Every structure is written in C-alpha cells, then in structure tokens.
Image (cartoon, rainbow, N blue to C red; front, side):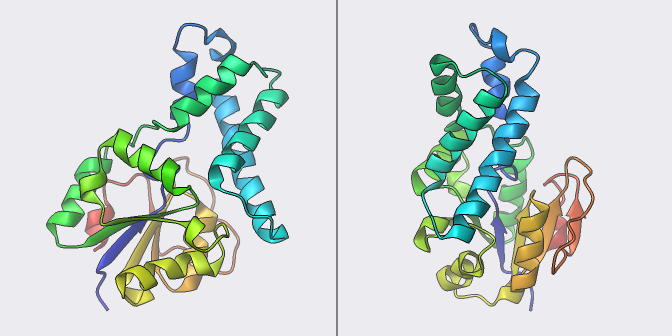
Length: 225
C-alpha cells in the first residue's frame, strides 16, 4: 500500500531538546551553564528517557511533564547546579523549544502532496500544544497524539496503535519518523515504514526490528513518499 500518513515523534525529532539549556546559557545569569550546557542537556534527555522506560516497565505511569522535571532535577544535582532560579528558567524554556530549521518546509511539502501529518509523542497534551504553538506549525499538522490516551510510554505497542485508530489506516500506509533509534525500531516492529533521523551519526540499535530508512535530517522525508 502507498504511504498516506506521515507521523513524527516530537522531542528530538521535530523539536530540538537541547534548545532550552542552550538558550539559558546565553541569558544574563546563565554563567553556571556557559561551559556545561551541552552536558546538562544530554544528561537531562537521557534521564528523561530512562525514567519513561522505567515507569512503563513498573506500571507507574505519570505524565511526561513530571518525568521531565524529575530528569532535570537529577541532571542539575549531578552537575552541582541545583539552583531554583535556573531550574525554573530551564523548565519554562522547555515549553518553547525550537523546531529544527527544515521542519516547516518539510511539513508543507508533505501537506502539498495531500498526505496526512501528525505527531505521536510521549509528551503530555499541554506540553505538545506549547511546543507546536511556539514553533508555529499547527496548521501543518492534522493531529497531535499523546501517550496519555493509553497511559503508557513508548515503545509499548498500544502507543503506535493510536495512529491507525485515529486515521483509519493500515500500518503499512504509515511512515513513522523519529530521531530515537529505539523508537524507529519499535515502530518498524509494529508494522510501520520507519525513518530514523540520525543527526549524531550513531550506530543502529540492536533490537527486534530495524528502520527502513536512515536520514541525517528531516529535509528528505518528502522524498520517501
């Protein structure tokens, strides 16, 4: 079947998860972060994912905003930067993450071809609304789907099932795009055609399935359909 529906992960795929720490480091009062923002951003993101997997495995679901705060608290403590003002600023900036530069034109190209476009994310509905609004891409998306509809984080199969339930399509009609190798692999295992956006040039994950495509950024996604 031809691809009719293109689904994107949000954080790290459409939105740059390092943007909050980078922005805070450049602001007045951001001296603590000047030389360490990249390491903090990396640890924040890694722990955010770790906590989502651990909660899914333990059956201890909470929304992604709580996971995001817990992960930041761990990262700040690890870097000995547990300053309340810095914490609040980083959390505020997380609601205004920048989209990668190629995102608007890429989404517009897909819509121009008559394709359905949507987000499928661990993020809570409020978080995703903030990011989409801040990036100005709402008109280029047909839906924003959150794991809160099923109460478990990716890569649980019930999350990927939200796409076909919402759009009435077969898995083979879906191209799923993620910057997370584990997410792209799990979606491939579910039955989606998948593309892994490997900006960092990382090796492929050793999991039960593999993405069909590997990209350096999102600009070539329209060529896949």
